[in-house]
Image (cartoon, rainbow, N blue to C red; front, side, top):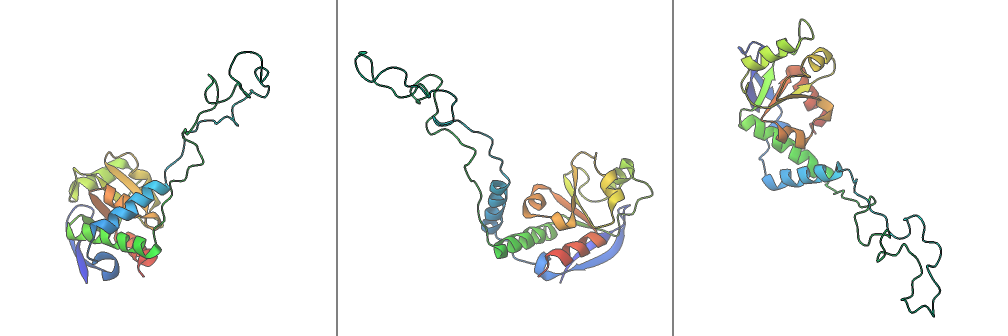
Length: 210
């Protein structure tokens, strides 16, 4: 069974904590992790660019001039793409779908792989608890300075009931927060360190362990 050091908030050791193998001891495979992150990026992409085709451009209902007899080329609408102010041909449209499908099993596997990678890289920091005397940023900043990876980016994983930590950790540079139930492959891979309390690790295990 996988194990990591359990720290107190002041950086001292409080022993070790065991982790379930199904989440924290899976052989990482870059291709699986990459596929899931690419799909997650694609599925969260907002389609903003949109051009109007000739059916969407305002005006142009009347035929510009009669079909024959003028010496000019025939035209049916001034909103044709070849006219100035007309529609756009093959432009970007908001109906385009970028979504990619990934099987649930693959998602679960990638999730376990990135967690395992953090354990193997000693980048999963387990803290005995996230109890604070007050919701003050300086208390969380002091905790981060005392724990490994103080100068690198970190994601704090919060269990239900750790609201004071959520408020106190909002304004620390290089530090972000996420609820244990919302943890995902992309966010785990984005940050160098993953910091969770015993309750947070228990919430991760309860939510995601199969």
